[in-house]
Image (cartoon, rainbow, N blue to C red; front, side):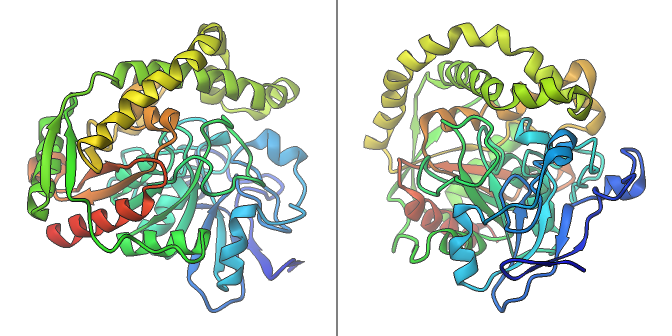
Length: 406
């Protein structure tokens, strides 16, 4: 075994053997981790998404082309400083959707993490391995990145909690970027208490607010009725004041996000794809091939972003937090997101989450009870949205929801 600085040891590298497991093999399909680690320490067990540098370990971002040219990271990503200080045990580099590009969570190179709630459905992406590691008890906390929903979507798919942090609050230096003006780092955990622990590891000294939000603004969307009912029931159970809010910014926010996202992913990843097209999966290649449809709108989107963002922030004068479903429907089946189903699935999966990346605001996702007929009694997911820097209030309120719905 090779000793790795600062206190890390590789115990297995399931996707990085000479041949590696084939995409169709049983081992590949069960790959929660790209690299298993056995770190010393007395702190919590933490899984780290494999687009976040860990000193001495190659960062693949779930991509064969990047793996082929990658070398062990010279130093930890900036966000790991608090974890090291707390003696966290890094249990592995978690699998992910390649290059963090899509919300599905599947991976053709290292195998696809299995959704522990329903193996026939997507685990959600791009932080799929991080979510599965927490949901299966292999980690107490996991770190993911969220550019267009990539912490919240897998949390919702796997029945756990996740937190997208305020843009710029947690440093992203030492992570493989996707869209730099949208990228964030955040924790996933089985409970809201686990998210608090995750924030304390990312930002030592973090403490939730002493009380939950006094008023929550309910945003209405075109969601599956059972999911809407689950969200309403969970909010009602808290005893907190809930007010219905009208806001017509969803479509505009999605359009702004899309123009910015496609322009920036091209700048980050096209050279890698051009240099090794055979090392980029078909779905990511399909996304990069669509860039020219959206790049012409980039400058206009940048010009419109401020006014649209103000329209969202104005809602916080009427309610301290906003609430809506994380996903508008239950997670799609794996076969439904292949081929011609890819783009429609991506649009549907991200329509409640990606726009908040364009706004730069924090959002939490957490499981709430759902009707038995919705998904065999598996949970729906509630998303709470806060103003910039509102993580403390988000988690205090999410804890109130969790306590009321157990």
